[in-house]
Length: 277
Length: 280
Image (cartoon, rainbow over all chains, first blue to last red; front, side):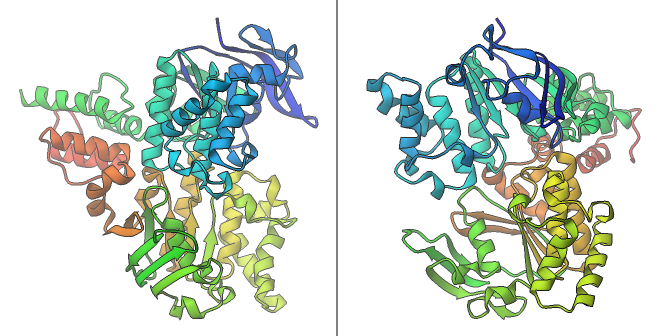
């Protein structure tokens, strides 16, 4: 069964249309990237996934249940959303309490709370801050704390809005590892991101949005290596995909469309060896 | 800066330690390093927030535009150092783009005619003609960041300091902002100091790369030369990774490349594949 089904959804804020007939499926065991320029409607779309917003027309199903028929609290157990600005989600007096609160709020068995808090703080490299106030942390750390809080109660669908903004290289790799392990656990992971390199490394499928509509959808490789699509949504191509495009224009016969350094390099080395032989 | 160290009140460790750094006009300095390495602290010294607003232990000497930071009030430093942050919304608060640009100039006590002259100049320079009567909150993130830079540049600072200016922007807007800064460096001869995590978009404009780790400067110099040393600390952009991979397989290329174009050019220069054009 699809985790989330968005079916011809229209939504507007005060008569201003933001979503204009969006349809989309989110599957378990898959990483889906929603991309597009600022103001395309990406954040409005993911707010429909746990019922924070209800469609004006059309419907959203979460594991088969219409979001209008259940409470946000019930939906949140299944769909955890980490918003772009962590400050909208943090309120406890310490890092540790923030995660404890999320667990208790979701009726996590009391005897397991302490251990689970330890686990997720370690996973996101936050143990050393356990007693600090969330507000004393940097933006990147606060973002990781909201991820920890949501991750703690183990929702089936995890939605991350701009997970890499403000994260340094090491933490970006940590978040990438986390997404891979969630995928291996057959969770559905949705990322909203401007970071094309991160999408190239993590996403299975990419959806491009332009002014409230999905303009295309497909395997990440197909979408992120198509120059016209990428231009239309104010993205840039991953550096490797762009290098491959330039090489082709100069007559290099690359058989595939590489997106990552090792993919491109193994093809180039093959060509060099053929050439020598 | 010579031998600058700072420890925040109540902290055990120094946030920055024995920093020696000097930069001048026409430099585009890209400042990178892991979270918590001291980048933000360093920026706070440049505009005098350290030592004037943050209490703690300040050592060494910092001179900005010839002024001793510990003896110069921040409002005087502000005329020489313009700051732009990650989230332009926090920086813009007036009812129109034009008002926003005039505000800082009026605050400096400039005569009305001069205020008007400078507003006209930056509106033209930053191509804000169509946006000048609109409210900043109605604008896109990229446009807001452009307005934030314009209102800072109206004060004609010699130094422009930016803390992750493109973190919330789509790639096209991010490139527009960073190349705009490159133009200011070239045409107006300012010094730009830019903190960015995404090297793949920022590196191509930098004339110099400075890397910090645990409060110290660990690399400072030509971007290409510094890059090879610091991959484990700040992560290589994909084309540099590809270059390093080919190198490890025995293919020698001039580099490392800062852009896909450079990568492709140096690959084709090194390897003569049959049927391929050697020049672009």
